[in-house]
Length: 280
Image (cartoon, rainbow, N blue to C red; front, side, top):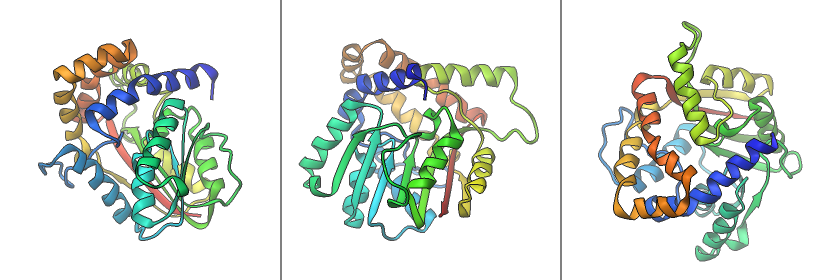
């Protein structure tokens, strides 16, 4: 991972994570609004429902040692640790996030079986075959080498263990390449959210087959999660949020002003919410 990209991602989340928690809570990911995206529900409940729907989709009923790659402030990590009475480890590029996740673990009485580290997902500080569940919820889009990222997830997974990866993708290009307008739209998203690039779900599947991950399943849940951006946009322009944005600085303000890029990306079918799971 290049130093410049590493620093940009770290600074983005160092600056914005406190505001996100104040306004939206501990889960820094999409919500689930039913398979067709029409269910009306509380935003936080929708985010919890996404976790539960992913576990159900992937057939995960138990886990003992979980790795959360791109853990944010520990939302998924601590939820899974409590749900499965498991040990959870989270990694992030942001020291602010790692420290807050550690605080939240203490507040939840989970310090004894959770840890949060500042680490690069493309060079993880873990031994081979360490975790029976590797969970990556909306972090793959930040990875500059998608193959190396998945290779690392596979390396630290125990034989028989399961990988669940959920990431932002662009539409498949087997029938038509991306247009110049689509490329421009993606580049605007990359610039705002500190992404090197995204790929399609079929491309991720091809990488997973080379690992080789077994029993691979993929799914596109774009329709189920697309309403999330409308909810975020509505909440971003309350007095509390505006004051918080001013304190957080320009990169966070720019991210808030660009929320419509993601909403329009879903509406046009360019942005896809891709799921991949399989066993080692």
